[in-house]
Amino acid sequence: MKKNPVLILLMICLALVAIVKTSMFIGEVTNLPQAETNFVVYGLAALFMIAAVAPSEKGALFTGIKIVDLVSALGAYCQEHRDIMITESLQGDDFDQRFEVMDDVTDELPMPTLSITDLIKPGNSVDFQPTANALSFGAEILKVRPIKVDLLLNPTVLEKTWLGKMKKSSDPFDLPFEAFIMNYIAQKIKENLLLKAVYKGVYNAAGSTPEATMDGFLKIISNKITGLTIAPTVTGVITAANVVTALEAVYDDLGEAYKGGATEIKVSPLIFDLYGRKFRSDFGSNINYSGITMNRRVLEGTNCTLVREPGLAGSQRIIATPKENMVYGVDSKTFNMDIQKFDRTIKILIDFKGGVIFKETHTNALAVNDQA
Image 1 (cartoon, rainbow, N blue to C red):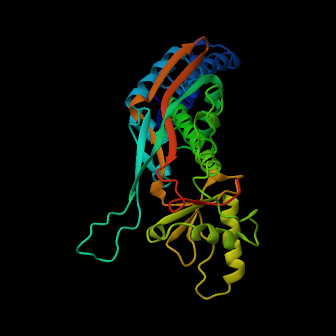
Image 2: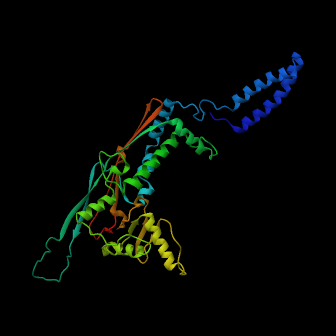
């Protein structure tokens, strides 16, 4: 149980008054010298105040961490907050705003597509003239693969970070130690997925990095270009001088049917900033100029939104497609967490599945440039 600071202060004040009174009384009764009387009284008072301010065993700030108790607390937290952990690490707005999210994908999920050639022709009441090979079926396959987290945790080291963070809080018990640990883990899983795996991933079963967990969108695009499924728009290296024409050229290569709906162009933070600054340089003096926007802005004169994508940092690739064409799949049912004591440390084991795919990769639905 935590101590009430107001009560502690009151107890200390009363103790100071009691010290003076007790010292005078003992001196009168025992006829001891004042120095010896003060030594006894002050010593007892010091012990009293230490007991008053010292945290109880239950409310201790983990100054003597019991590994067994912490393992139990972590396990209970994970069980109670499993859905929150899934949302914070694998789903939520950060994913919904970027992709079409599909849950409960256990292994492979076909993404069927149907292409139809031109159908109408001049009327003829005599002859039946069906269009040959009018329908063409295809399917991209969303593949989710097992992904794991193996973490060896030293609680005494992480405790210092927790205590430092809590110095800024009105109550250090607002964020329990076990919640602090699991929140950090959830945020790191999300960061690894969005910044390293989803775009830059190249699957390698023998790998040990976030990039090895899946084939990301950049790898899929590279494979489609190599297989001649899509032909990239030639832009050359993107610079401050050509960024506007390069983005517009990629947009122009989208099919007209897709331009009629909402589409997005995803680019690295550098290219996004180059576009904003170039636009400011060219049109900043116009009365209707609204300034550089953060993260999203409309590509001038289109129904297409230019999106700043941190996952593309370091890449010159421009990706133009509807948001719904970029699919991110997970299997929350297989999301599992296991907490184990290991000597003076704690093992945290987390398992889940994830993967990405484009629903459609023909030229009309997906336009990219020639830079990797």
